[in-house]
Structures are given as structure tokens and as C-alpha cells.
Image (cartoon, rainbow, N blue to C red):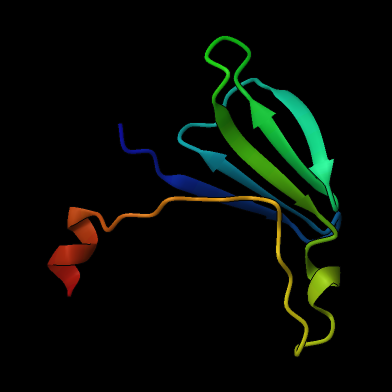
Length: 83
């Protein structure tokens, strides 16, 4: 089943939150480097993740960051129609 990513950024707290599909209750687990994943307790699926100190990571424009997250992407019909 296709799920869309929903991004929420709290500038004051410098926190980027990404929900996979509709945001839902989950258990949070820090996986390192200020990255937290959220896991659905019933299905054990990852339903989102949070990156703390998001803007601070990129204060120096030449700096890049690798996060301990792997994703699979595909193009949706919506995007194909625009191209």
C-alpha cells in the first residue's frame, strides 16, 4: 500500500518530524545521532521518524549529513502526469 510522507518542522525547537502515512500513536526509539524512529506497536512497522537539531546540522552549507535511515522511493501517477 502506498503511503505519503508528511513533513512537520518546528523552527523554534529545531525538530523535523516525518510521518509515513497518517500520523498515529507509536513507540519512539532513538537510533542514534539525534534520530528517533516511531514504530506502530501492533504491526511493528515504522510509521515515522524525527530528526532533532535539524537546521543546526546544516549551519555550514558545504557540510552534508548521512542519517541511519534507508528508504525506497517510487514515482506516483500524479507526478508522471506532470512530467
